[in-house]
Length: 115
Image (cartoon, rainbow, N blue to C red; front, side):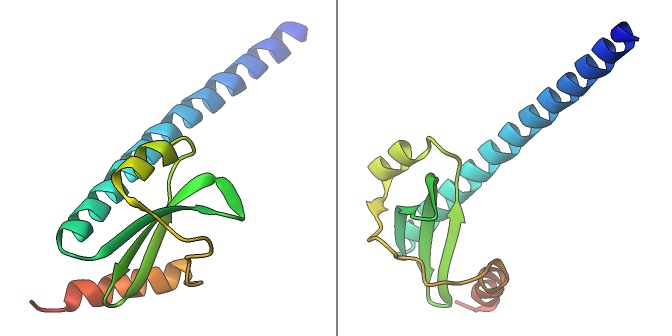
């Protein structure tokens, strides 16, 4: 009985460890994609900032100001120092209150605009 519990516990821990590794990879990919989007936006003359969300101070936030409105993404903890060397610091309370749905709408509007 104890051996069975031990193996079940071991399997569960191994599964949790695998999921944590997958999440780290996903966040790493997201951090790089958002960093790339920010750099490309900045190169096109759009304002880009990095800041701290007072509600989630461990998670840095990227802000991109497009003609269609503000976009923002939280990135992994520990990423702030790297970002603050590359991008301007946002003023406190820089977020305009947009939802994820509004952000996605603004992205679609921007992508539909013709040059």
